Amino acid sequence: MSLAEAMGLLLTLIARFITGAQGHWKGCPPKAEQRIYFANHQSHLDWVLIWAALPRDLRASTRPIAARDYWTSSRFKQWLTTEVFHAVYVSRQRTDDQDPLEPLVEALGHGDSLVIFPEGTRSNAAEPRPFKSGLYHLAEQFPGVQLIPAWIDNVQRVMPKGEVVPVPILCTVTFGAPLQLQPGEDKRDFLARARQAVLELRPVVV
Image (cartoon, rainbow, N blue to C red):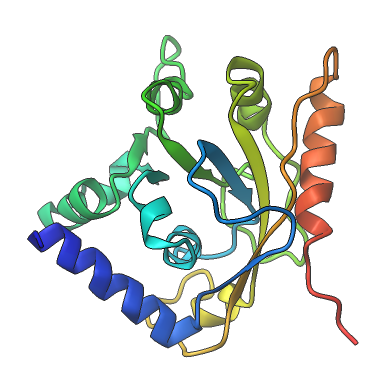
């Protein structure tokens, strides 16, 4: 086992110890197919939690999206995201001639699965913000890739925005049924439908 593999296993165990990292597959099985997992976004732990909730064989081919300026700001963070998580770097500050989806398109073209957060930024709101257009364009370019909605519950209490020390609280990731862009479907309608699919996975509070 390489150092990166050992670190990945260690981080998975830590994430599961702190949060439980329970994955509930309600709409699809944990199958080794090319997918785009899209979820609500409330914490730095979000993509780690989804990654840890996946079976090991799925983690090997599933890559999170990472902000280049933050995750390459130190040698350790760059090594972690590159060698352990195999992250796809995106630039939050870009020039007019840059396509922000280019790294994602390249990864999907290589057959990788992705974890993305269509809101684009973290939010403390109870419901996700309106989704940005990236998910629509990826669905349009890669109609054969499954789009899997997911709801991450309780993670904002583990590491709220602005905090750096996690608090042990049970968290869950609920995966829903695959979505597909319908022929001729309007971008706004599709994004609203995708957001609603994420919202419908919220646990029912009794």
